[in-house]
Length: 257
Image (cartoon, rainbow, N blue to C red; front, side, top):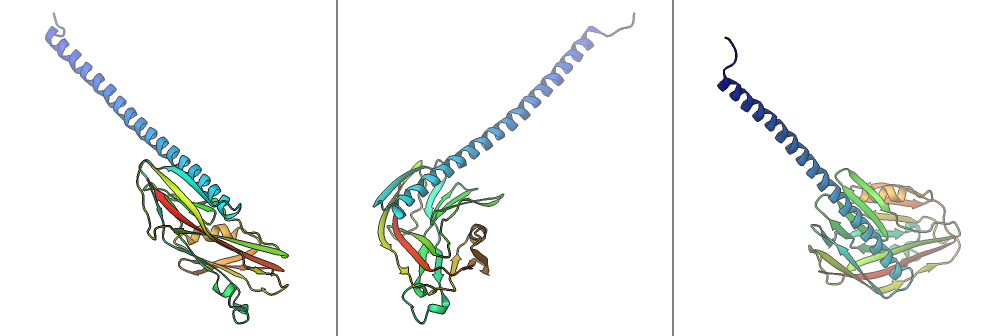
């Protein structure tokens, strides 16, 4: 009588079991790895979204000082694996080259050196500068919140928020949370109120993120903007204002873990 031997049948059953078990284990491993990667990606995205909201709160608090006259504000930001620091200087110049000889004390010397506040998690940077918030990540940079000058042919206001280090250092902090203490140091409101005095007004910004400044300022129909250097954006005010205000609030920033 021909047929499989019992021992051979047992071996076949064991081999089949091993193959099925191996397939199941492989599928579970693949699903687990993919699921873990997805969870980590979702966690990182949520952490960045939380950081964006924290930077928006920081901007609002800076606005309380710059626009509403508050003497100081404090903002707590959760960092987890990120860091917070005062970044490399952004230089903002507001000038009218035609008026430099007749009134050098006003627009000829309106140069402001600003230390942006930078959140960095290794992949994404969130940057606060003069009320604007930029997001810079491997997929490209975006303007989260714009700077808010007012351009009008009767009244133009260019508000400058000059954030500086309270300790004259970059103050890089990497901790679970950081407290950003901001205090008004000085307020300056020079006014040009003679009609037609300033007819060639330029705003120049030199920054490592000049592409984002160009994108932001170029959206305003009152300005004509272009690059004037690798890191510099030059914007011309197309309509001369009757009155020009260039306000500056200097804010000393201290980062505390």
